[in-house]
Image 1 (cartoon, rainbow, N blue to C red):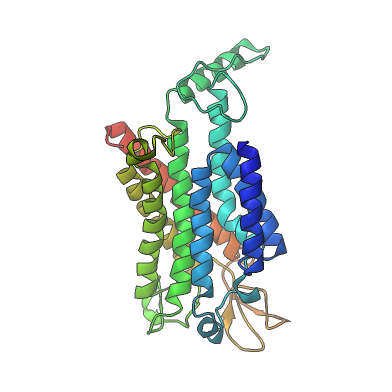
Image 2: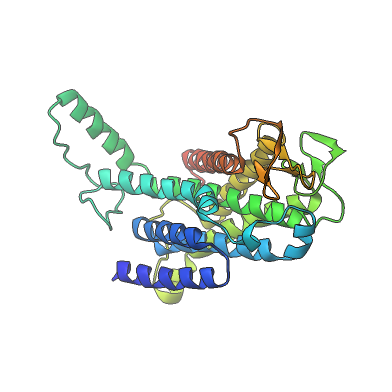
Length: 329
C-alpha cells in the first residue's frame, strides 16, 4: 500500500510539475525516480523535505524571470530543470538515504523495507573467513548502537539546505539593487550572475533557505503530532531534538553555500561569450562556443554544487554527532 501511494502521489506531482514547466522531460523522469527511492527507503516525510526544496527553488527561479534574463543570468529553458540539475541537487541526499537504509538493514534482524529498528541484534554473516566475519560482526554491533537514521538525516538536511540556500542566493541575489562583489575580493564589483559574486540580498536568501529546510524538518519531527493526531511523523529518528535540526541545518547549509561561492570565484571554469561578451559558466553561449577565461575546465557548476552539498552535509552530520556526544542533541 505504501508503494502504491508513493507511485500515485509522485505520478500526479510529476505530471503537474511538467505541465507548469518546472522540469523538462528528462528532469521529470529523474525527479520521479529520485522521489520514489527517498519515499520507500526512508519515509514520506523525508520526501516532503525534498518536495519543499523543488517547489521553493522553482518559485524563486521563475520570480521576475524577465529581469534576470535581461541580466543574461536567467535559468535556461524558461527556468525548467533538466535531469542534470535534478541529479546535481538531489543526488547526494539520495545517497545518504541509501547508505542509511543499508546500514540499518545490516544492524537489524530483517532486510528489506521496514527494517528500521535501531539497536537490534546484528545479522548473521555467512562468510567463511572467521576474521572477516568477526570484523563485520563487530562493525554491525557498533552500527547498531548508533542512531543511524538520525546521523544520516542530519547529513541529508545539510545537503538539502546547501542546495536550497545556493539556489535562493542566486535567484534573489540577481535582484539586488546594487551589483554583487566577489567573495574573495570584496572590493571588486562584478556583474550580476557572476560565479562567486555575493550581495546582501543573496546572503539573506542563504539564511532563508537554510531556515526553510531546518524549520520544516523541525515541524515534522515535533512531538506535538503524537498528542494531536496520535502519530509520530518521524518514528525512525531518535536523539534528535527539533531545535537541533534547525541548528545543524543552518550551519551545514550556510557552510556549503559559502564554499560554493568560494569555488565559483576560484577554481570553477569560466568562459566568455563571443556573441554577447558576457561571462558564463557554460562552454557554449548564444549558440556559439565560448572563450575560456579562468578556472579548471572540467570543474563546472554541477560539480561545484555536488561538492558544496557534500561539505554542507558533512558539516551538519559532524555537528550533530558532536552534540550527540555531549548529550545535548
